[in-house]
Amino acid sequence: MLAVTLLLLLAVGSGVLAEPVKFLDCGSKDGSILEVNITPCPKLPCLLHKGGSYSVNVTFSSKIESQGSKAKVFGEIMLVDVPFPLDEPDGCKSGIKCPILSGHSYNYLNKLPIKSDYPSIKLVVKWQLFDDQEGLLFCWKIPVEITS
Image (cartoon, rainbow, N blue to C red; front, side):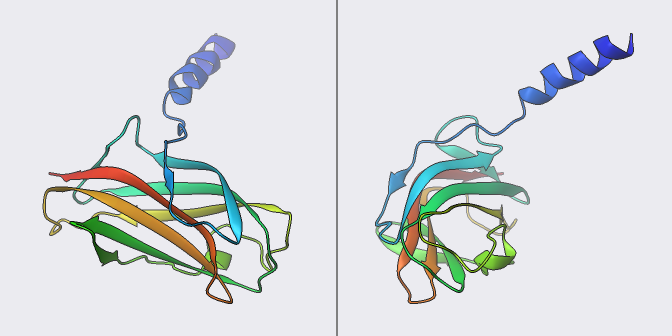
Protein backbone atom coordinates (compact mmCIF):
# COMPACT_ATOMS: atom_id res chain seq x y z
CA MET A 1 0.00 0.00 0.00
CA LEU A 2 2.83 2.38 0.87
CA ALA A 3 4.50 1.69 -2.49
CA VAL A 4 1.27 2.52 -4.35
CA THR A 5 0.87 5.76 -2.38
CA LEU A 6 4.45 6.79 -3.14
CA LEU A 7 3.99 5.96 -6.82
CA LEU A 8 0.83 8.10 -6.96
CA LEU A 9 2.60 11.00 -5.21
CA LEU A 10 5.47 10.79 -7.69
CA ALA A 11 3.07 10.74 -10.64
CA VAL A 12 1.15 13.76 -9.34
CA GLY A 13 4.33 15.59 -8.38
CA SER A 14 5.91 15.09 -11.80
CA GLY A 15 3.17 17.25 -13.33
CA VAL A 16 4.35 20.15 -11.18
CA LEU A 17 7.96 19.95 -12.33
CA ALA A 18 9.26 22.85 -14.37
CA GLU A 19 9.20 22.56 -18.12
CA PRO A 20 11.77 24.45 -20.17
CA VAL A 21 10.30 27.57 -21.75
CA LYS A 22 11.09 28.86 -25.20
CA PHE A 23 13.14 32.02 -24.87
CA LEU A 24 14.81 34.58 -27.09
CA ASP A 25 18.53 35.06 -26.47
CA CYS A 26 19.07 38.82 -26.33
CA GLY A 27 22.83 39.08 -26.43
CA SER A 28 24.50 36.41 -24.30
CA LYS A 29 28.15 37.05 -25.10
CA ASP A 30 30.23 35.65 -22.24
CA GLY A 31 28.04 32.57 -21.78
CA SER A 32 25.59 30.26 -23.56
CA ILE A 33 22.11 29.52 -22.27
CA LEU A 34 21.35 25.81 -22.18
CA GLU A 35 17.85 25.97 -20.64
CA VAL A 36 15.40 28.36 -18.95
CA ASN A 37 12.78 27.00 -16.53
CA ILE A 38 10.08 29.08 -14.87
CA THR A 39 7.78 27.55 -12.27
CA PRO A 40 4.88 27.64 -12.70
CA CYS A 41 4.71 28.47 -16.40
CA PRO A 42 3.14 25.63 -18.38
CA LYS A 43 2.89 27.69 -21.60
CA LEU A 44 3.76 31.07 -23.09
CA PRO A 45 2.94 33.77 -22.36
CA CYS A 46 3.60 32.98 -18.70
CA LEU A 47 0.65 34.10 -16.58
CA LEU A 48 2.12 35.95 -13.60
CA HIS A 49 -0.45 36.45 -10.87
CA LYS A 50 -0.22 39.56 -8.71
CA GLY A 51 1.05 38.71 -5.25
CA GLY A 52 2.71 35.53 -6.53
CA SER A 53 6.34 34.57 -6.79
CA TYR A 54 7.87 32.57 -9.63
CA SER A 55 10.97 30.38 -9.57
CA VAL A 56 13.54 30.96 -12.30
CA ASN A 57 16.27 28.42 -13.10
CA VAL A 58 18.72 29.18 -15.91
CA THR A 59 21.29 26.58 -16.88
CA PHE A 60 24.18 28.20 -18.73
CA SER A 61 27.82 27.63 -19.56
CA SER A 62 30.44 30.32 -19.15
CA LYS A 63 32.92 31.32 -21.85
CA ILE A 64 34.95 33.46 -19.42
CA GLU A 65 36.23 33.56 -15.86
CA SER A 66 34.60 35.93 -13.40
CA GLN A 67 34.86 36.48 -9.66
CA GLY A 68 31.18 37.42 -9.41
CA SER A 69 27.93 38.12 -11.23
CA LYS A 70 24.96 40.45 -10.94
CA ALA A 71 21.43 40.03 -12.28
CA LYS A 72 19.10 42.67 -13.66
CA VAL A 73 15.49 42.13 -14.67
CA PHE A 74 13.30 44.40 -16.77
CA GLY A 75 9.77 44.52 -18.04
CA GLU A 76 9.95 45.63 -21.66
CA ILE A 77 6.93 47.84 -22.25
CA MET A 78 6.61 49.53 -25.66
CA LEU A 79 10.39 49.11 -26.20
CA VAL A 80 11.18 50.75 -22.84
CA ASP A 81 13.00 48.72 -20.14
CA VAL A 82 11.29 49.16 -16.77
CA PRO A 83 13.37 47.65 -13.91
CA PHE A 84 11.88 44.83 -11.84
CA PRO A 85 13.46 44.71 -8.37
CA LEU A 86 15.13 41.46 -7.31
CA ASP A 87 15.49 40.51 -3.66
CA GLU A 88 18.90 39.01 -4.46
CA PRO A 89 20.74 40.37 -7.53
CA ASP A 90 24.05 38.66 -6.60
CA GLY A 91 24.40 35.57 -8.81
CA CYS A 92 26.93 34.07 -6.38
CA LYS A 93 24.13 33.96 -3.79
CA SER A 94 21.67 32.58 -6.33
CA GLY A 95 22.92 29.07 -6.98
CA ILE A 96 26.18 29.90 -8.78
CA LYS A 97 29.36 28.68 -7.11
CA CYS A 98 31.86 31.50 -7.60
CA PRO A 99 34.37 32.13 -8.99
CA ILE A 100 32.85 31.36 -12.37
CA LEU A 101 35.18 29.31 -14.56
CA SER A 102 35.37 29.19 -18.35
CA GLY A 103 33.90 26.03 -19.85
CA HIS A 104 31.84 25.13 -16.77
CA SER A 105 28.04 24.94 -16.53
CA TYR A 106 26.03 26.62 -13.79
CA ASN A 107 22.46 26.76 -12.50
CA TYR A 108 21.31 30.27 -11.68
CA LEU A 109 18.29 30.17 -9.32
CA ASN A 110 16.15 33.12 -8.32
CA LYS A 111 12.59 34.26 -7.65
CA LEU A 112 10.52 36.81 -9.51
CA PRO A 113 7.99 38.35 -7.12
CA ILE A 114 4.94 39.98 -8.74
CA LYS A 115 3.77 42.84 -6.57
CA SER A 116 0.06 43.40 -6.06
CA ASP A 117 0.34 46.99 -7.25
CA TYR A 118 1.76 46.04 -10.68
CA PRO A 119 -0.65 46.85 -13.52
CA SER A 120 -2.42 44.05 -15.38
CA ILE A 121 -0.47 44.10 -18.63
CA LYS A 122 1.17 42.01 -21.34
CA LEU A 123 4.90 42.59 -21.60
CA VAL A 124 8.24 40.94 -22.23
CA VAL A 125 10.51 40.02 -19.31
CA LYS A 126 14.22 40.52 -20.00
CA TRP A 127 16.61 38.81 -17.58
CA GLN A 128 20.33 39.56 -17.68
CA LEU A 129 23.31 38.22 -15.74
CA PHE A 130 26.49 40.28 -15.90
CA ASP A 131 30.02 39.11 -15.12
CA ASP A 132 32.46 41.19 -13.06
CA GLN A 133 33.56 43.12 -16.19
CA GLU A 134 29.93 44.06 -17.07
CA GLY A 135 29.85 41.51 -19.92
CA LEU A 136 26.67 39.49 -20.46
CA LEU A 137 26.88 35.93 -19.20
CA PHE A 138 23.31 35.56 -20.38
CA CYS A 139 20.33 37.57 -21.56
CA TRP A 140 16.95 36.08 -22.36
CA LYS A 141 13.43 37.31 -23.03
CA ILE A 142 10.00 35.70 -22.69
CA PRO A 143 6.46 37.04 -23.10
CA VAL A 144 4.37 37.28 -19.93
CA GLU A 145 1.00 38.57 -18.82
CA ILE A 146 0.54 40.06 -15.36
CA THR A 147 -2.94 39.27 -14.13
CA SER A 148 -5.09 39.48 -10.98
